[in-house]
Length: 170
Length: 172
Image (cartoon, rainbow over all chains, first blue to last red; front, side, top):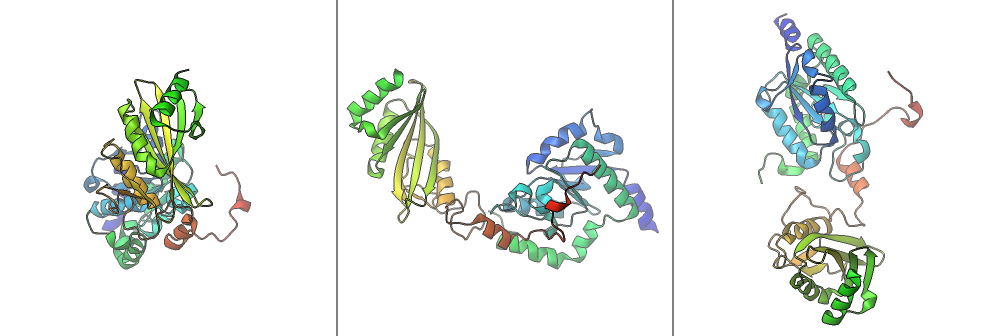
């Protein structure tokens, strides 16, 4: 019961951390600024992972950046939501045969929502965020719970892609 | 005019055969030298105002069984770009580092070492990772490395239960 009330309130104020690994970052400035104005839906940019609610992974992830995304995601406070942005996070996109980039983000981190497209336009981003807010209110967006419960499975996949480097520094 | 003068100069001073020199475009010249002669020619160019090392890159000619190393040099005094090519065998990919001539060569040579496996003697960073983390396969930009097979084996692809090509339709 209390969880449901929390979910309703959570959906209204979302702070987004955008991890601009790929070309997708170029669609975010028009989404944030005056023409499309993301802030009228209550979504604002946030500078640090520890205070953010949404992690937006824009574009392809090389194995090197995947490590940093995993660190970033694990630093965020629960509840937290992960949005995969663009075809590259969904199925590899045009980099599906690259030796350096991963093909599916949801093998390594729990993705709540994918925005397909190469690139998604600001309209699609806003529609996706509205969908995410609905999912948060209804409690469908439970990626952080899945990550907590299936830690072993995610860790196995992360180790397969990254080798033993996951928690080493260089 | 300018480049013809320059070609005559290096033919005379360095004793290069004119068959090794081609004019690529206006103000751009390509020179091919033997791998043994390359370092002498590059330091000669440094002494005649080619102070800018723009790029070092490598090409894997797998059919001919050699690597081509291309040094692109720019002279601001002469307003000329020269690319110096040299060939080294694939069986023993080894070249002398030019870091003492152009310090900017550090990262280019390190990069080539990581992606092609070419060893630059005298470069202290050889064998250390630069971009790739935990790489254990053969260098990825060699032509006999199959990136698709590596990717499909290491990173699982998404399974679709229908033919994606045949489902093309417009959504709102």
